[in-house]
Length: 281
Image (cartoon, rainbow, N blue to C red; front, side, top):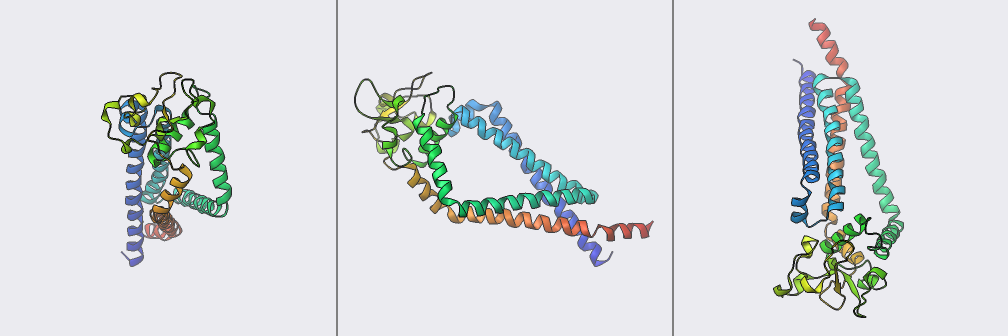
């Protein structure tokens, strides 16, 4: 066996093994997404995310797993069986994916101000219509989760909630905000801990109005709530994790480039393999 044959065999099996790994990974992602769909209750109590956003994330995981499995299957079969059409399709799909990521990166960097305004408009609209339509709560529950995770309240400040009709109390003139604004780490008063609708808000007790049906879980604005807006908290999170985000993006890009290089090299040199097989025959 010549050096070129050995190199092609190495590339072939490297491409097969790497894609086999990603096929298994895609299968695990798909199964995880289906598991969440089947056993929502356990995951709601574990991650503290309500049913609707959890259902959206589980479907996204399942779809991502299927796409990963399909792409990896193209690479596995194309490399192992030396099918030029499958290798070409595999290369084209990776190239399209890579070009899409580059385009998105350029758009995000050049349209940063417009993107920030768009996000702000969406968030403020979600706040303005908070619990106005009880049957459509996916965006609102997702925003509750964002406030809880980022430890913030409102987009600019908690005052974003003060003019919302559904949060006004008939019992008092004080302002109220959603329970996701509550800073449970600021108090050690365990006597007020009661279980309410969101697992992560289980420490609000008598301060909160439990959410049952059309009721809304609220806490007084003058209680222990987060005073920083989520716009500022999101900027801090992006700044603190900037290196990690860039590193992940570069790693994914380099991985895609490596697979594209291996697949196109193998595809272009299959003629040599076919000629060798013909000579043996």
